[in-house]
Image (cartoon, rainbow, N blue to C red; front, side):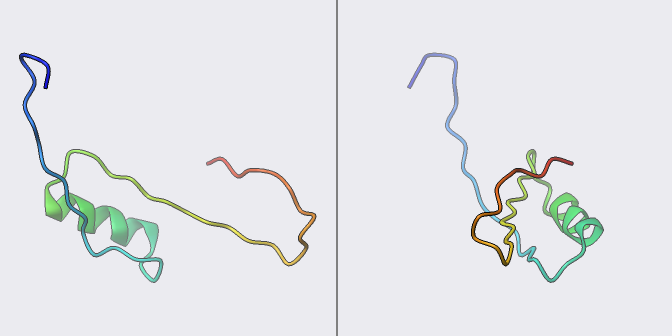
Length: 55
Protein backbone atom coordinates (compact mmCIF):
# COMPACT_ATOMS: atom_id res chain seq x y z
CA UNK A 1 0.00 0.00 0.00
CA UNK A 2 1.20 3.53 -0.74
CA UNK A 3 2.52 5.59 2.19
CA UNK A 4 -0.07 7.99 3.61
CA UNK A 5 -3.00 5.83 2.51
CA UNK A 6 -5.25 3.82 4.79
CA UNK A 7 -7.20 0.71 4.01
CA UNK A 8 -10.96 1.03 4.37
CA UNK A 9 -13.70 -1.54 4.29
CA UNK A 10 -16.89 -1.56 2.33
CA UNK A 11 -20.38 -2.94 2.66
CA UNK A 12 -23.81 -2.78 1.16
CA UNK A 13 -27.15 -1.76 2.55
CA UNK A 14 -30.45 -3.47 1.84
CA UNK A 15 -31.85 -1.27 -0.90
CA UNK A 16 -33.59 -3.06 -3.75
CA UNK A 17 -35.47 -2.37 -6.95
CA UNK A 18 -38.69 -2.65 -4.96
CA UNK A 19 -37.80 0.63 -3.21
CA UNK A 20 -38.39 3.98 -4.88
CA UNK A 21 -35.26 6.04 -5.52
CA UNK A 22 -36.11 8.36 -2.63
CA UNK A 23 -36.39 5.35 -0.31
CA UNK A 24 -33.06 3.94 -1.49
CA UNK A 25 -31.42 7.31 -0.86
CA UNK A 26 -32.86 7.44 2.67
CA UNK A 27 -31.61 3.89 3.36
CA UNK A 28 -28.12 4.86 2.16
CA UNK A 29 -28.09 8.03 4.27
CA UNK A 30 -29.19 6.08 7.36
CA UNK A 31 -26.33 3.61 6.76
CA UNK A 32 -23.85 6.51 6.98
CA UNK A 33 -21.97 5.68 3.81
CA UNK A 34 -19.58 8.01 2.02
CA UNK A 35 -20.58 6.83 -1.45
CA UNK A 36 -23.91 5.77 -2.98
CA UNK A 37 -23.81 3.60 -6.10
CA UNK A 38 -27.05 2.59 -7.79
CA UNK A 39 -26.73 0.04 -10.59
CA UNK A 40 -29.54 -0.28 -13.12
CA UNK A 41 -30.13 -2.80 -15.89
CA UNK A 42 -32.79 -1.89 -18.43
CA UNK A 43 -34.33 -4.20 -20.99
CA UNK A 44 -36.45 -3.96 -24.12
CA UNK A 45 -38.64 -6.51 -25.89
CA UNK A 46 -36.77 -6.01 -29.20
CA UNK A 47 -33.28 -7.54 -29.25
CA UNK A 48 -32.12 -5.04 -31.89
CA UNK A 49 -32.81 -2.09 -29.58
CA UNK A 50 -29.61 -0.17 -28.83
CA UNK A 51 -28.73 2.89 -26.80
CA UNK A 52 -28.10 4.26 -23.35
CA UNK A 53 -30.12 6.08 -20.73
CA UNK A 54 -28.66 9.03 -18.86
CA UNK A 55 -30.39 10.94 -16.10
